[in-house]
Structures are given as structure tokens and as C-alpha cells.
Image 1: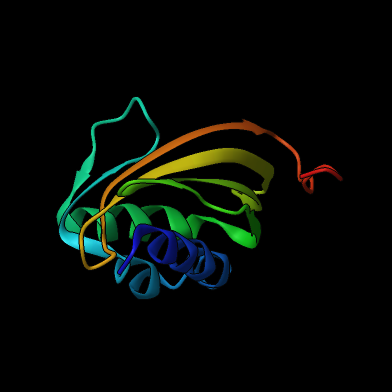
Image 2 (image 1 turned 90 degrees about the vertical axis):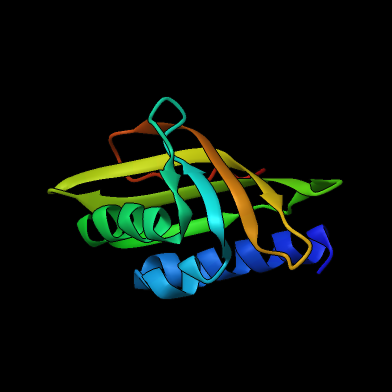
Length: 130
């Protein structure tokens, strides 16, 4: 699968599966040996088990999830995808705006995932030009 198609599939899957907290739909995007780093300064989660661990730890804590994804920017086997997400966590409204940098294998599976983001403690939709 070409990286542009893989990146669009990644964004489309996350946009549907994140609000539904569908760990398996998201995990299916990743290669067996994936390196998943989120947030950037934390040690990575390794392999599909690590991806599932991260998702199973974080997604259940998020309620009333709304998310948006931009058009992927693709170069070679890598893509950068802008995203925006709002949810409630432990009765606190949160909004994160970020970019995920991905690298794909020849089958279109993610082998490297890195998140960079910023957040505010309120629910805020994307700005008009986003």
C-alpha cells in the first residue's frame, strides 16, 4: 500500500474509532514491531502489545470524545497528520491539538508513531480556518 493511502486510512480509522474507543480498529493499523511514542518525552510503547497497552490505558479514561483530522502530508514512507481532539477526563474538559508523525512499512502498517501536541483545560472546537 502506498504511504498516501495508508496515511488517509490511518486518519479515517482514528476519526471513527477514537470516539468509539475501538482499540482493535486502531491497533489493526500498526505493524507487529511498531514503536509508539506518545507523548514525545515518554519512553515508547513497543509492538502491538505496547500499542494496545497505551490505548487500553488512555481511551477508557476519555469520555464524550470529538475529534478532527487534517489532510496527511506525505513524503516517502512518512506522513504528518494534524489532529484536534476534545474530551472529558475525570470531570475535566480537555482539548488537544497536535500532529502525529508516522512511518509505514510496504504493507501500509505503521512502524513508527510519534505524537506532538499542546492542550488547554477546556472544550474548544477547531478554529474556523482549521
